[in-house]
Length: 186
Image (tube, rainbow, N blue to C red; front, side):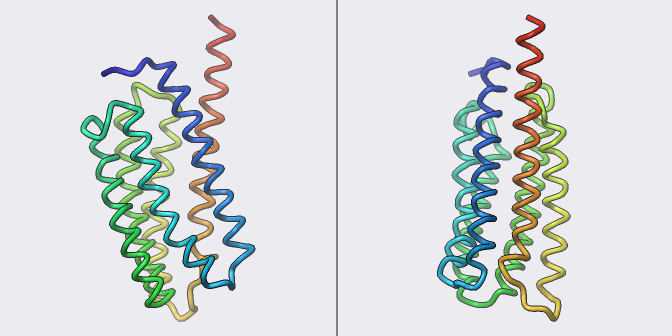
């Protein structure tokens, strides 16, 4: 099943806006509840779970999981990491940051691949490629911080989420402008 470029562009624009809004809301709640362990634990577990769900929905809207293997792998990786984060939350903040680092590397590489694969059929994929590369580097940074002396907090993960929000918002805006220009030139 092939997706019309305009339909796919409209879908991706809405999807990217939704991902940005979720990430921004996550950051706001994280900053406001930085000392409240129950809320922080919930936020830490819900973020990879949301990523799994979002990738699943996007893959389904674009031909299914079989046609989008990188997103299928991202769904699996994010689902597994949700369980691992749940366990890590009960261990230590160092464990949580390590797990988030590993997950950022995996999901970043898979997002990078998805962006490259969509390059010819969808707009604004250069932003998703850049986001995937940045996520991979952020993962390495988080792992290195997890072995530091300073105790990690949710605020060590918030910048990673913030960059994700920025890239999703930039992609959505890019597709919005492209759609507007296309409509004006038609």
